[in-house]
Length: 605
Image 1 (cartoon, rainbow, N blue to C red):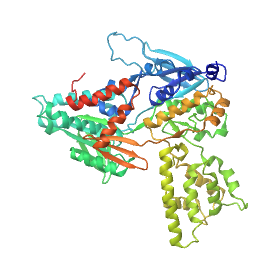
Image 2 (cartoon, rainbow, N blue to C red; image 1 turned 45 degrees about the vertical axis):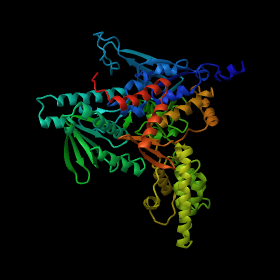
Image 3 (cartoon, rainbow, N blue to C red; image 1 turned 120 degrees about the horizontal axis):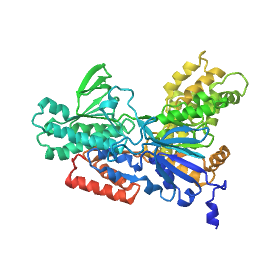
Image 4 (cartoon, rainbow, N blue to C red; image 1 turned 60 degrees about the vertical axis):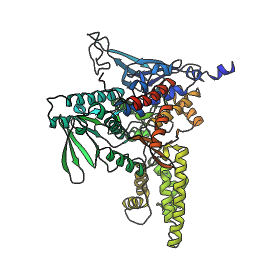
């Protein structure tokens, strides 16, 4: 009886919870709730995708190194006993009324046609639509590929986000090889057909190129011996380094491996347009235009927010139109996604919406909003301006609450030590700088509050920033100059990367929030659980990437880069045991063995 009472919601009812999406955030959230905890709520998952996709291994499905069904799990299996599921697409959210509108196609005219559009836009004939009310909305619909407005991407390139994308690429590659093998195909046409272009030098682009190269090395020579000499692979990257967010040694090793495999890496190139026959690029160094033939092009250049997120932001602003104290101009000001606080509550939703994963941008308190209060506190002598010492003391005092001030506090600390001899001051600065780097690395390995995610500027950049705001150049800031400085400091804030690791940990955190039995859609309940549970913290386990020939890279905090064949085996092991079910682990493990022993299946289905 005691255990049962502990699992009753404090409101005495079952709050209606609607979860949008079936990705990492949703699966981690519901999977982390015990059946007893989940039964405190009436939970319904709504998603146009009736399965969970293990996205880190999606690039391996482009040529069948791993079969696509090995890395998907029916969402109903995952949420059984905890939530209901509706296969539909959310099209509109009324945040004031707490209501969503969903839809999907009805019965198709040709009943045997399974290629119909299941989730048509607008008022399509026969479309099924329905409304759902909620007390709490968990918003985890993810994001969509970003084409950056480049002409021809939608018409000619394969974007890379879902299982269907990998299947389409796999079929296309098989298709161009079979066309190239026909006797009437000219040598010029053959080379164009067998020219593969991958756009994007991040983890996804690198891993797609790596899997394609493995297929060419291991299988093409056996299956298409007459064509192997005509195959070319190009990777187009706007930056100067592959995997630019990883350790530099990983970037160098990846480039070296690609060059050994015959991959032409075009560094510092921007895609201008894609036509039916060419990829038109511009070399940034001299603006020279370079056209590339292609038979298949894969677009892996990042993500942008879903159109539904834009609508939700607008609805939130309309709901808060009579609350000017919220500063509506900045309330949902972010192009990456819906803005949530450190507790994953969507700002301006008053405890009714939580957002996580790629759909959300977690943002801390902006120090600009309390500029007047901070200025008054720092101006202890009432002189109407803040000197270096006053700013140092103020920023050190407030760094825990506003971590974006920490780097500036250290900067002002060095400025106040300028009276010391240069050799002593520089030695002390060096010791403290190295100690700070070690503390920061260790902190990142253990936990990282979202508020610590600020872009480091460096002393020279801060010098320049102060020169811009300190109009009279006296190293003292009046109230307006101080506000300008804080506005620039807030611009250093950045959100977590859009990775499965972040979304999964956010889901677990949100499960802890809901396991308390407190959230019910009322702001008072949110305030209580916010104080009880504390903010979301992120445990960074490191980053992984596979770059071909059995080689992989681990970028681990403090330890640094681990690369090569041993890392490749570790990568396979980690991605296998990280599957969400024992069935998937067994399937993925068998696929590794099958590919190694029997090769990849090039049948077009």
